[in-house]
Image 1 (cartoon, one colour):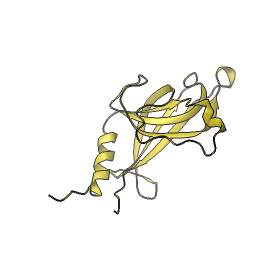
Image 2: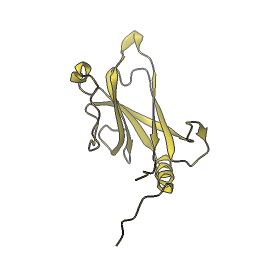
Image 3: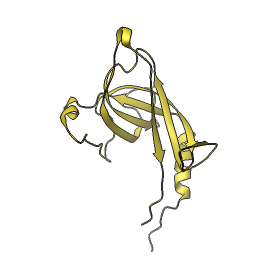
Image 4: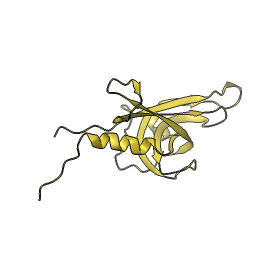
Length: 144
C-alpha cells in the first residue's frame, strides 16, 4: 500500500479545529541560564509544557491570509492573542506557549506551540502594566 500525503486543506482544517475551541496563551519564566546563552536555546518539538509557567489567559483567535492580513477565514494561518492584566504574570518572562484542550490551570491541556524569547520584565507594584502577547501559527503543506 502506498503512503498517503497530507494535502494543503489539512492546514485549514487544523486551524478551524483550533479556532472553534478555547485556546490558552501561557507565559513563563523559562530558565535564568538562558540569559547567558547565545543564541537563545530553542524549544524542543517533544516539549509538552513550559519550563516554568507563570500565568495563562484565554486567547482570541483571528484567521490571516498568506500576507498576514486578518480575514474572515478559515485559512491555514491563525493568530492567537491574550492580554495579561496588571497583577498577572509578574516577573521575568522568557517563554510563551499555546495550549489546547486545557483550562486556565497551569499544566492542563496540550502544548501545541512554544517559543523562547529574550528576558522581558513585567514588574509588580506601581510600575506594573498589562501585557498583550500574540503568536501566529501557520499550518503549511510540505513540498516534499
